[in-house]
Length: 266
Image 1 (tube, one colour):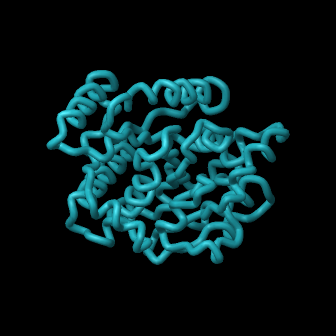
Image 2: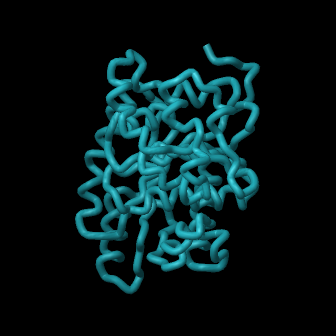
């Protein structure tokens, strides 16, 4: 039975694609920053052992005391894990390489698929009054990614505008369906966002046509362009919205955030 005395929780979105290099972490960071610009309070949960989301939001390795690893596997309070960033109303649960062994340590736990779900529903979560929690998943369909999908309300899929892009979606969709049938019946696809899009390139346009023909309304109207400012921003530990607010990449993520907010209001 749900606790009716608790406030409505944040919308939890897993940013997932088992293929690496599709702009997943970039999307998690910049969508989070764009949501903040729209007045939202946002937590990024770094669930990737590479810890790129943590680095991209300015959390140095030596400052990652308790991490998402401790949150999933331990009895650690959220207040000990969640860190502020340099950006107002944007928090992070950081990650380190320790997460790479989490799958092995979780496998013997009877609740292994629900560990992140339960961690993000500690009563302490209410203290932060988050509007959104974005989970940056590892580039695999591992037990960590399954945990993200069980914890989430929806899955946002970055899809690189390249040949065979759609073929890689089938396994991801199958995993979503399995999670929906076995552990989280409310899980749905938030949307597919085309990334690294070059409108001068026939291939990008063809991938977009194929995606919209096959997936229809699941594909966001916004496409994320191939933009040098997006690529440069992480080296300064900044979202592109802060690095170059008027760049095409920044404007695209602001448009994507508006679409995500509109879906939350439905």
